[in-house]
Length: 417
Ligand SMILES: Cc1cn([C@H]2C[C@H](O)[C@@H](COP(=O)(O)OP(=O)(O)OP(=O)(O)O)O2)c(=O)[nH]c1=O
Image (cartoon, rainbow, N blue to C red):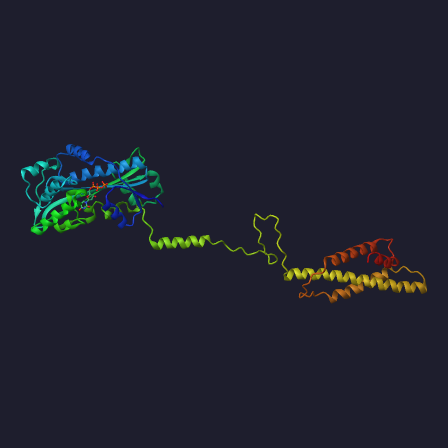
């Protein structure tokens, strides 16, 4: 099915992860006031643990990003995602400035905040969570929610497995936006342990903040950049931390993902197209004519081609003509003989006698020319052919008429020379 995925995100990481998975997509950046929405959610869910908060906040934000894109574009297949870091009861989004970024690293590395720092981070303090510091370092949790909206029309075109349909139907609030879209929403979480027990790490942090790379990352760090040096242990999928849990996406709704064609597939399609472009060679039905006629040339008449059967036809016509000519010659001779006899014995009706001579010679000639010579290829002149034919028919009509006598024949031949 040729449908493109709309990635409702401006995150370069999400784009590169989709590219990595060879998914065919275009992007749209939904405008959403994430901070206000998060504040509202924290006010409602003020008595839940940080793990649950991570799920709630990212789910709501991912869904609203996808919904905004659906309303603005009406695209049939939309993917949106949201990532936050929860550490020691604080919800860590993107740091607004270097100072906040530095405080975030203090939290992530298990350091104690002073009063001022705690004051700055007051709004982000979402719940009272026990500090989880183990031999692996300070623990924090990264939550990434994924929301896939698929139009009902498009969903009906998929040949989904029973298992997938059941899984979709079991999801809460499956149908959204006036029932036009089916919603698939899920959260992935990963645990990260960080340690910075050497001045070397302090330098890495300062360099990273100075580069400005921290400002578009939840928690102010990136697992895929130099701050990876601070990470001692990860529980979960690294792509959940980077903002798009590709393994879970493919596992849960891979059937709905449009994949890019590999070079081999594109090449094989090209070959198929080339083969289908080749017009079939139409063999002429009879071996007698070969035609270049096209529908545009209605008056086109094919050039006759001399074949074995056409030569045979020609020879049989020639045989008839020769036979007819021979008959005429015989009649001439018979008439001469008759005239001679008449001169001596007087006039006699000789019709049956002539007929008898005629038949005998016909049979002789027929026997001689029964096997037509197929090597004959020069057609008889049309005028001669017509003349012989006309003579033959006239002669036979005269012979059958009662008024015709043998004596009339020389005159007839002279007249029709
Ligand atoms: C923790 C962490 C986050 N991040 C990034 C992923 C997300 O892009 C970003 C979290 O912010 P989000 O608000 O989830 O995403 P975004 O604003 O970058 O993009 P959009 O809302 O348009 O989809 O932090 C990393 O790249 N590496 C990391 O290790």
